[in-house]
Structure formats: structure tokens, C-alpha cells
Figure: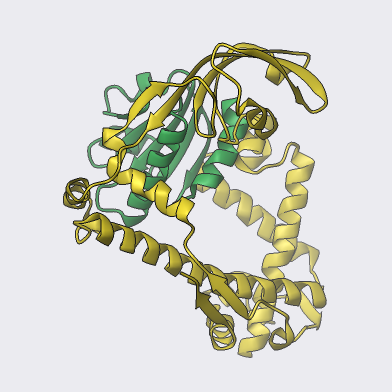
Length: 282
Length: 104
């Protein structure tokens, strides 16, 4: 590789969260319990709106998105407009009121509202679920199911703490080091990334519409996309050279892909494991 | 529509209107099972969202047509057109974020 390191920060000196407390929130447990009971749920009409209710709204406003004769919105679902959804709470089905979104008035009529009512889970429901889901085959009672839900969640949190520490160290190294990037290598990486995307998705990044780019990449223009790819190329090459330096790999006669094939993140994972304490809070 | 299981015969009809989330899955694939739970939660929260599940073993023609090499593979449709697709397991928040751009 022609890119080289001018200055490399010592990852062992990076600040990261060394003491982490984890717990399983009741809200998460409640949401997972619904898997046992969802086949028994009932949707009922409601009067006063609460978070989670499904509404049909008529909206009138100068804002295009908020000018519709009929639109489904889940209160607090967060995918239509968190600002409007928050203002729905406490209003009634059949009511018309004025909300404010982005400083503009929106005339809202709640045409319809329903709520999903889930029954209390029973051991019989747990046994039924266990019989049809291999991963939960041992969870034949509500208590056993709940125990698995909590344990799985805490395991994820432990992994999250570990990878969070690794990421903090990675950012420290990337921010505090200095690379002399070779433009040809950056452009080669970008071309390869575009080719891979085409192979995986059948879509050519250079032909994507604005809507496709926003959906897939979170950018609106081709210029923004090129900037994201360029930045990603720098990060990837920098990381590869860092790992090569830690492992004592010779880089001059090898391509980035040859180096990557010989690399892993074990050194960083082991370092974080040895230096982190994860406490469980009941 | 809520969640519907597709066949090779009715696939095109199921994705032809509105916003549709298509989940190409396999019965024994562990990440697919995790994603299935996420989709169930989304269905409970957004019952007006159309979810189509495609078992790759039961729908070989459709899976071949879409060159499904890894599962799960999520396709996002709007009015019959593929907006994006995402191979691999993703969480509910990620799908919510994508739906914000596509659904409204």
C-alpha cells in the first residue's frame, strides 16, 4: 500500500467507559410479553387518545405533508411526525383541533381511533408459543419465557458495552492519528465499494434517484454520496493500517484486501474485556 | 392487509399497491427468526403497514428472480416499485427510520 501512517495514537491510552451498569427495562419486558398474547389481542375503538393508539386523521395545513384528507398515524409511533403525534395525546376521537408543526398551524380531525388490547399472558399461551418457536422451546411457562427475555437482553447489553468500548477506542485512534492517504488507493476503494453495491443490490449508485438515495443511504445528492464514500474510504484504509501496525504486518507489498484477509479485531476486543467492568442492576 | 405469506403466484399482486415491506426468510435461519419478532412488533404498532413474508424454500421462482443469496432480505416497496432492500437482520428502530422516508 502507498498510504502510510505519519503518527499513530496508542489505543491503550484511549479513554473509554470502563464501568458500565446494565438492566432490562420493564417497558422492554412488557413489549416482549406481547409475543405470547398477540394472537389473542383485540382492537377496540377508543375515545381519549393515548400513546400506541392507531388513528385515522384528516389534516389541513400549508405544509404539504400535513394536508391530507385521510392518513393512518400511530400515536407516539414516531414515523409520521413525533411533533404532531405528541399533540394527539389526550384529544378525542371525532374531535377537531389545531396543532402546531414546525411553527405552522395544522387543523387535525381525529376521524377514527383504535387500541390493541393484549390479554394477560398465561402458562398455556407460553406453552403454545414454545411449541411453535424452536428458540423458545424450553420456555413453557410465563416465568421461564420472561427469564429468557431478560437474559437475552442483558447478554446484548454486555456485548453492547464491549463494542461500545471498542468503538470509543477506534474513534480516539482515528481522531488522534495522522495518515498520508494515497488518492489512487482511495479512488480504488470507492470504485470497489460501488461495484459491490451493484452486485449486492442490482443498483448502480451513480444512477440512483434522490428518493432511492434517501431511502438507502440517508443522503439526497450524488455529491453528498461521494463525500460519504470518500470519508468511508479514508476510515477503512486508516483502520487497516492501524491493525497492520499493531500486528506488525508488512504493508508495502500488499493491497488493502490482502491485509484485511489476515486481520481481525481480537487485540482490541481482548483489551476492552480486560479493562471493563459490567454490573447488572435488577 | 397486515402480514400475508406470499406464493410465487400472488407475489406481484401483493406488492403492487401502497407501502409494502417484504421479508425474504427461511424457516431455520436464526437471524430471520429475530427479524420475524421485530416485524411482529411493527405490525402491532403499525397495523396499517403491509408486510409480505416470502419463504425462500416455498417461493423458489420469486427468490431466484430477486437473486436472494442471503437471508433475511428486506425489500421496501412503494406502489409496486422497489425503493430499497437490506440484506441481513436489522432492528425495529432502523426499519422505522426507513419507513419515515417511504411511508409518508
